[in-house]
Image (cartoon, rainbow, N blue to C red; front, top):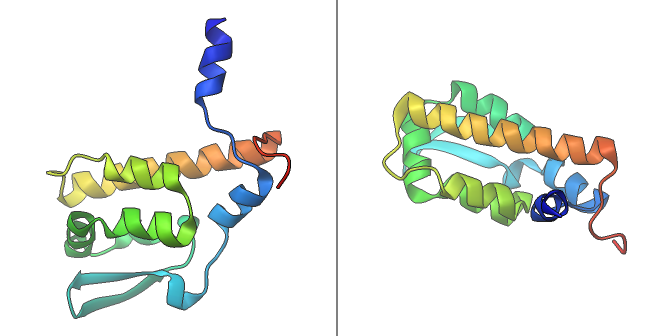
Length: 130
């Protein structure tokens, strides 16, 4: 019985939703990294995988700036459409900053991408009507 409950806690997604989450968005919908208001870095991420790679080398001032404003969570929810990842990013300690913050964001995003890949590979589905 406990095993059944444990499995029920993991929210499974249909293939269409997973495809939407891992897709590449147009450049104008990408995540545009800024160091501060009016100070763009010129770096744009157009998918979660791209975001993960760009995060590895992003200007640390940009990482701190966007995290304080909750821009990562907002983009992931609003453009990418992944409420679960947005929630996980939002739960990172608010006082986190610098390299520790970067590493935590990378860990969370990488974990979610691996989770989504596993769902695709194993053919999990929650909503078969989609």
